[in-house]
Image (cartoon, rainbow over all chains, first blue to last red; front, side, top):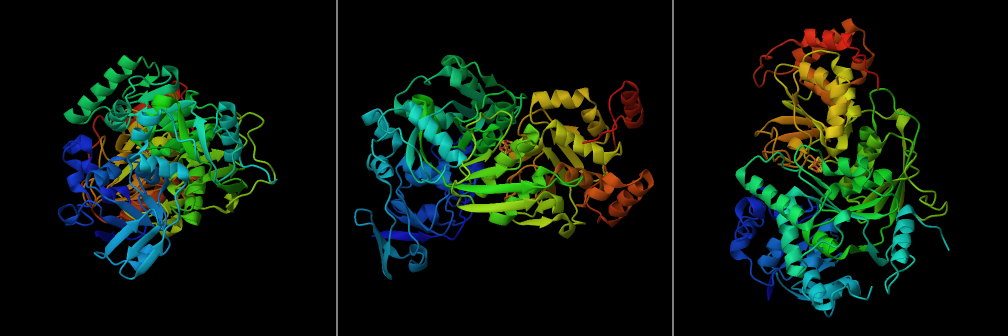
Length: 164
Length: 463
Ligand code: SF4
């Protein structure tokens, strides 16, 4: 079962990976080891592939830096459930193949460290305190995610999905 | 059927023109695949963009004449690592055969994109920088995107967009002397917050006739509201069709009376934590930054020079001035504004982003306080995470440099020479001792100003 990592509102990309640890500062093989290094120092030691991030409003706001999302992908984050997402962060996640889904109640239902199951097919997040309903993703975004992101989708199909 | 917003009109038009299975009459909430009239790429993301294109298996950009590349974010290169990345960028530009390339010192990407005419009104432009919303200053739908999106745009010449809802901001009246459109747009951020326009397009009404620079300030600041785009309606560049229908539907409407507006100050560490200047008077500052894509133009520099009146800035304060582009730099040189600022004690940096994002050109030390004319004040933005950044207009910046504290610029603009001297003396005396007073090297300020006046350079600065 996945562990839930719970964050509040307005989590910005500087908290995910601070600018001073950008790939061009510390290298492609190291930048992701600094994920949440200020905000949650134990994160990279304890996170396991498939773990789920939970957040409030405006998750991923701030700079457009894609390496924040690249770091989460590198660490194998299974998905992010938040009340709402900042727009560039949302796109970056879909493009890099990380499921990002909105849910009004997840953040109040889940406590940090809870075991949770992100069931995208059923459209729910199962938690010890009940089930949070997820807002369905647009079929277009779902197609990109199914392929593992926009790059693998385009490599396979040569063009954007023909669904909206 | 209800009418369309400007965003709906642009996205309908480009999408229908593109034909194909996904062409559609676009309404808020629809997903469209749209052709891009230009892609903007800047220095700090080039490695990731090149990696994205490699992964896509694409060697060449779709149309070299529609790609514009800039070295501005950390320029001239502050470290060997950055210098190497710039070299990689230049090699890539040459291999690709991209002619629209602006190297270090030419200026901030957004300023050049607009002032050199790369933003066709009514088209979609994507940029690797979040403030690409700026292109709405001339009626283009400009959106910032991450490196993979930019790589895809470069490879295909198209992108996917969810058609945004729109927020209508209407300005009325004229701002009083000493109050600017920077204050106006900060008032909007104050009203709706940093996510008040998330996924939305902010449509500005009552601003179409303003100078282009003011319109860039407005459109660019919509990024700080979380917006996908910001568009000024009714600009001289825009074609006739580029108006919203009278019955277009808006998610929110905001009205700002400019006549009643006071100068606005954003208090660290949030850009939506905005107060009237009267609530921030007396706040000491160590560094003043006058520049950025938000306020680095000739008009901004002239406003600052108008406040300074040939006086030297406070001895404990550093003033960093960075013109937004070479054109602005040279205009400010030609009319004596840069001379006036230098004589006042400013450090003039080469055109570009300068210290705005804390990579080069006078970054902040721990516990320093900065008054910046840029657009972001979050923790660590301009250097040390322990520094704090207040954001204001060029007028406010000039007063802060002059006195060492935040103050209302309006009395300084109206004062007689004696009153002016008294205002400055009072605030300087109020300022707690901090930092160390710097000696002015080669202090010929009076001679220079006199010479400038004789040679016909307009030192009587009137905005
Ligand atoms: S001047 Fe500042 S806000 Fe504008 S593009 Fe440069 S770094 Fe970004």
